[in-house]
Image (cartoon, rainbow, N blue to C red):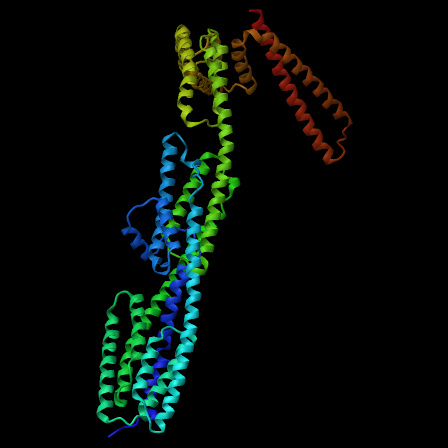
Length: 624
């Protein structure tokens, strides 16, 4: 007894096409993506992805020349496509070894006395050969892609031919003359034909499956043959479902997706099952596929989001370096601090993963350009600084020579002033090379210290006199404080006058005690004057008397100055008095102005009287 498959029973099996289309597309796209990645432009960014890092960590250490020779050998061979992992590993090793070379060169430069801040690595002489080999590999992979496209087109045409033959066979089957063996042969031919263009896969499979279903439905096979065939196909599809469900436990989401794509191919190639089981087995396989595809989609959405975040972080780093104001970097320390900031940003860049593929190279080129500009400007600055350091070094050497020429002098005062001026000039000179700094400073300060030590020994007797003077002036202050406030004012004033004269006769005191001692003396006198209610003019005269006693050599000059001042005041008083004669007191405003001018005249007359008294005091001192 034979059974013919009904068209509506075939629909469930045909639904595989629409449901598995996404998985098939993903499988083909994954392969193309791998090839595209393998032929991508060679960049200089040496931050490996996880897979390359794993290969790299297991690879033995080789030289950069050996890496280039290996890449050239791969480029010359025919197995370029399957060497992708090795090529990526070699690329990472090449740039890692270059980084080690630069670090070693920097350490050697520092060991030889160089400044790490001004180190610039030499040009990479091997990078050109490296990129040439990588470009050859890229071109071969591109050729492979073109070949694959041609093969897929040929396979497509071959499958169309199989479909046409199947149509003829189905037509013959409708007439009652099925050829089962020929049908099986066509099925074998169909399976032998591999990849076709992605956009043709679904349509081809639908046509083929529909014809296969029609052929089976039209065959006048006995029910035992059909049940056996259905049972065998069901067992195959059940095992495929088991494998798909097991992939739900796979930790490597990308690997699980790739395995699922292969299972979809196997499920599609397996023959039909009995109508009552078709929906069940397909629903089971579809459920597992949907779950895996959702995990895969979520994984890549998370990856894309991370790449977008990485792009934002890398863009922020680029902007931070690009916004550096070079006009503000005017000192060695400023450049040193800013260099450390840039190095920290470079370290942070290396910790950030890849940006989206279409932006990854562009953002790296922007980052490298910003860094190159910074270190170029830094190099220019230090070239100028080097010239300035040399000029400062020569200047300080000249100061050392000048100090050494003065250190044996016995003209204590003049030489001390000259050395102090040299020290001030030294402080005004900028920095010099670090390796000369300590030695030159010791040379300069040594000459200065040598002179001052000699001077101190020579002037030790003078210091003894100053200490004795200090003792006497302190005794004067104590005597002033001891004046009896209850005694008559005349006696107190006489005592003050006597003590101020004694103060004036005492010579210099140690310089460090001078200001403090005079302040105490003046405060003591002010207290006595306030107690005796002595006028401000009398206080000025008393202070003036003390000062002129100290400047005996300049009394004549002081007298001439006071006489000129007195004559000037007389002229000013005369002018005001003449002006008063022209002013009218007929109105209030005029009266106020007259009063003000009278006050000024009286003040000038009082000041002129003080000047006259000062002149007399100077003359009395000159007669002594």
